[in-house]
Length: 146
Length: 113
Image (cartoon, rainbow over all chains, first blue to last red; front, side, top):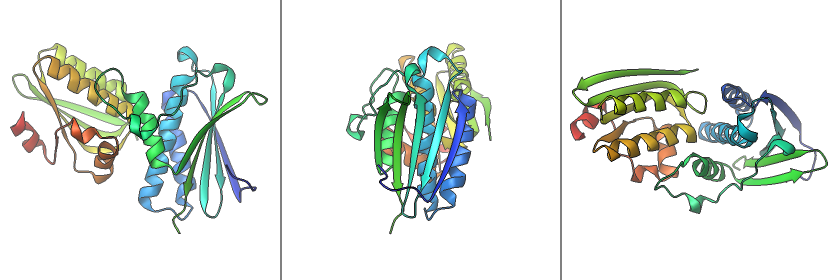
């Protein structure tokens, strides 16, 4: 978790609908491209954010598309922290699985796949509930290579 | 960027679905429908050409996995064409190169069906 104030912050709110995930991806592409990330790292961040938003839509209750997902980007010299914030009251929380749980044999694999991708693509991932603010958030950090 | 889906029958029971654009949570239902329609109409051997795909997420991967499973249940198969290193990397890091046959060209994939 960032311990100091970020150099800059960018915030975007999108409706919890599949057609807006691409908007979040475009925004994060713009943010990450302005930092000292490689092309591959920018693409990793873009995919991770897409997956995080997709997970949010999946978890916001029962196909109700009226919720808002907020993407908060904290830009520092050596890292990008991205918080994907969802209304806690509407969330059906599930843990983001560790990469070791990537098993494919049946059922609907997308959920595990998205969690595995986020864990692999980003350097740090954690989830947090903030009952005071009524927020469930997925926090992801990517460090700029030295 | 959206997704373009072009399907053509190669021979009886064999078809190619060529995708271009972004295969994500918004567009993947179209891919799923295309695969399901082919399978229901007796086309059980399918090549999905990802050569034009610039973005693929877990939803797209899930649709391809479902398509492979359903095709094999009907004694068919689903093979992929992909030469984009970025897309190939997604298959690699998720371990999906172990369950999919991924070919460099459509001709090669069709030959293996």
